[in-house]
Image (tube, rainbow, N blue to C red; front, side, top):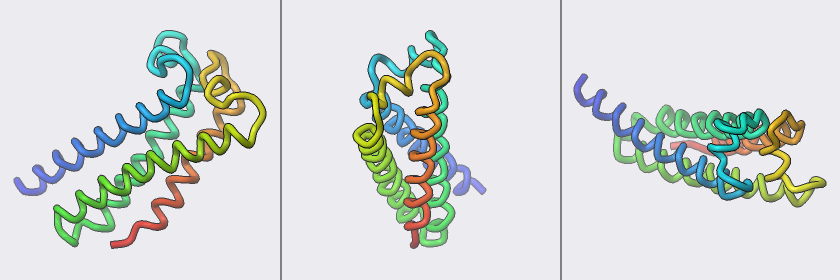
Length: 139
C-alpha cells in the first residue's frame, strides 16, 4: 500500500504541473492575466474555457496512467508527462487555429466579462483535442 501511496503522490504532482502548464499556455494566448479575468472581473467565458482545459488535461492524464500502469511506474509516469505536454501543445494549436478561422480575436472573446458563445466553441475544441489524444494513447 505504501508504494501505491507514493505513486499517487507522484502522479498528482506531475498532474498538477501539467495543469499549471495548460493554465500558463492559455494565459499566454489570452489578453491580460487570466486569473484576474476569472477571479476579479468574474469572466464567465474565461472560466468556461479554463475549466474545459482542465477537464481535457485531466482526461489525458487519467488515460495515460490507466492504460500504462501495468507497464511499470516509470513508463506510466513518462507517458503521463509526454502525452500531457503534447495535449497542452495541441490544445494551444487548436486555440490559434480557431482564432484564425473565426471572426474576431478568440483571446478577447473568451475573456469578456459576460458570457460569450465563443467560449463554448473554444471549450469544445479543447475537449475534442483531448479526446483525440486520449484515443491515441496505447501502451
